[in-house]
Image 1: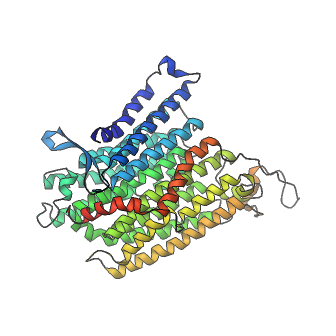
Image 2 (image 1 turned 90 degrees about the vertical axis):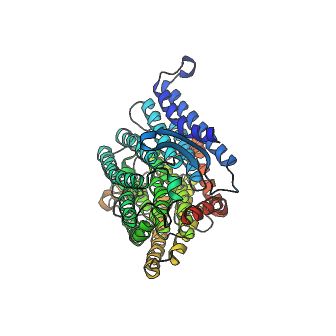
Image 3 (image 1 turned 120 degrees about the horizontal axis):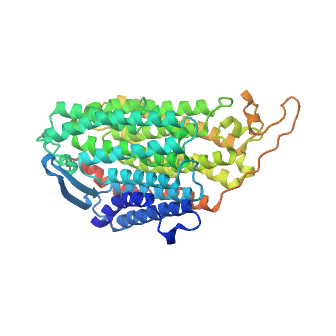
Length: 538
């Protein structure tokens, strides 16, 4: 188990280095580009197999205990150690990361985005995977920060070199926001380590009671500083404005990994660091975190409604990005309740969002490849998508993703949001119940707004129809005449789902159904670990 966890973290880095080296003669094949893409699929497939083996070998009877641990002194003078381990909180995120990266590599093998050499693309993808996996596996504050920052450079280049329109602006905005947040977070992490005398996250989580070496003031400063850095990555309103631009400009696999994995690093940090290590400081800031989360839920939904309306020239990819602001608001609300119910709901919503939004970004990326646009007015016009009639399997899968995202009972999106609101109904002792009831009501309003804009999207994109061509929207897809002249428009013929698309997207749809029908499989892992974290490590 120790070797498996170490391999999961290290193999992507070794694979990234190997991707940049010349391929052996027997592996070049006819196309060197395809050879390096095949290398990416192989490496991410091996990492996924190792992650699944970790999950199988995990002691499910004791999910609160750190398992597969490695603890080696690294920088002795500073007390920094190479400390790895997984529990019921980190294991699902580790497997989700390995799965999404493998599916992205598989999809890219058949459909590589336009850009520089495939070697650089595969190497960046593997470095991104290594940093994300390390974030969920390390148990040292300094290592956590290094892994947290490790993902920024590869994501920046994926957006800037393989992205779409305004990719340079979006990449710079992404890197500046996240780097500035990380500088503040580093100060908070150093404050905790220096005041407590250790950077070990397990030791800090079990020494947070009355005898904790962190005073109330230190905890307040630590949670404020660390929380800002984590909130930017989450992203929490109003620190979210980098996200829609990054998603809109990023290539398909960049959007999938950004929404499915990178956003989870911020919320995971709240659960792994802020809640157990500085509970007094977290208790003070919890109402503010919940307020920002509730506003984010409503704000994200209203932004999506504005983009979905007819004539708004809304971008479907941007709409799903704004939906992530709302969905991650439920995660932050669950964490802010500081109750086992709310935190378990937040962790469940993390996984559900990764599966569902990852699937949606895959689908929207493929829709753009087929039509050359993600403009909703163009997709909904007379010559638009109308997927039910022109590509029924594609349309059915898009409708499934939308229904799952709005939180239909029986699918994965339902449980996390429901548990987060249950946690807000009865928050932790000392937190204002009337305030949290207000936040719960706002979250409930957000679920209604979410259903509204997603159903509008399904109706317009999947069903199509005779919509007025506002600002030339409908004509942009090949119309040669005007509405008044009665010129005919020819609907484009598009392919339905290809085999490689089935292979890359089916696992996400299947897991969305399984998690919705069998939530105990995930909650049984997270609940004992959450109970222990909230109980001071006992």
